[in-house]
Image (cartoon, rainbow, N blue to C red):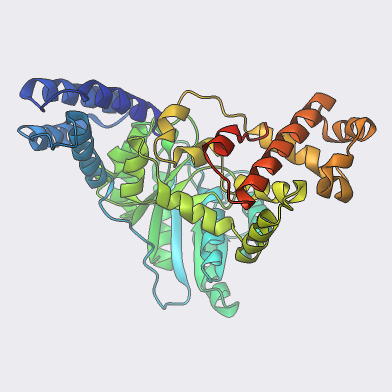
Amino acid sequence: MFEQISEKFDGIFRRLSGQARISDENISDAVREVRRALLEGDVNYAVARKFTDEVQKKSIGKDVVKSLNPGQVFIKIVYDELVEVLGSTTSELELTEQIPNVIMIAGLQGSGKTTFAAKLANYLKSKGRYPLLVACDIHRPAAIDQLETLGSQIGVPVYLDRSASAVGIAGNSIDYARKNARDIAIIDTAGRLHVDEAMMQEAEGVRAAVNPNQILFVVDSMTGQDAVNTAQEFNRRLNFNGVVLTKLDGDARGGAAMSIRSVVQKPIMFVSLGEKLDQLEVFHPDRMASRILGMGDVVTLVEKVQEQVDDKKAAKLEQRLRKNEFDLEDFRDQLLQIKKMGPLKDVLSMIPGVSGAMRNATIDEKALLRIEAMISSMTNEERTKPQIIDGRRRKRIAAGSGTTVQDINKLLKQFSEMQRMFKTLSKGRFGRTALANMRFPT
């Protein structure tokens, strides 16, 4: 996400490095480049102009601290301003003791509203709530069926009525939620390919029928500047509480995110990063600013790890490592946990210093799937005792996993190297040589 802006910023900061002082001349050049980077990244012109004016005002006359260089001082100034533009503080859903709390989802067709509604239900369920999904999109073909399917995948009921109006469905869903002990009703409304009067009147009717606690505007990050115009119109008619950015894992330039927050003065609350129903993040302005500037996002990375790690399994794995009993079964379990954290490139981008190096790298996401397939094609005995895998077994495993014998050979060789490294670690001799020789099977 924000890769285009990040890459431009990286070049600007590198050009400033090595100079003894921030001067009017070099800061003016840098600010000009920042403005160009923002505009090319699809940031609204007025927002980009205000942003760079503030950066320039705060940069002129700044002395370089002994341990820093102009590039680092400038990065800090740009970072602080980015946090300000993106919202300064994290905005959470404001839920009350009311039964049910009502959350209305609005936006254009194709923005990802229905998928987000299910993701939000899944997120709230993980927090101990009892959500209900409400199918009020009666215009898009199969929209109700889609919500039913998504609801069944996460174990959340869906209220629907194929013969009623959207306003009628929304109103009746509140009584249904109360009778079925559902403390949150998430209402998925209809969209169009563009803003039109019929859609807005229906959305206003739904809002009047249920008096929602929160209205969330869902926007496709790839729609560029048109997203800002759409956000302004929805905010004028519905006065929504927050913004949800979808498809930031795609080819989005990211500028719409900065623009919407500044133009409508409503916080970005969630970021949706893929099709999987657990790929939803609360939006943290400071963390996002760090990622844009290539500083990584350790806090989010740690949170993702904590969500996936089972403490009992982790303790068991530690004991197995200490006893040098780590086998292919353990390795497959670790791969599955990594997969649940999201796309590998996104995970690596959260590590400080790695995002810039990975920017133009090709990450083969299918490599993990191939390794998983190869290990899954082995018997239990083969996974715990890989040394028994002879030529005949390798041919069978390759055929069962859709790979080649050479792939099996490479996996077993690299896994053997990993085992030797862990053996060294368990004996307390883990040093630079062991670390340098460690390779991840591909």
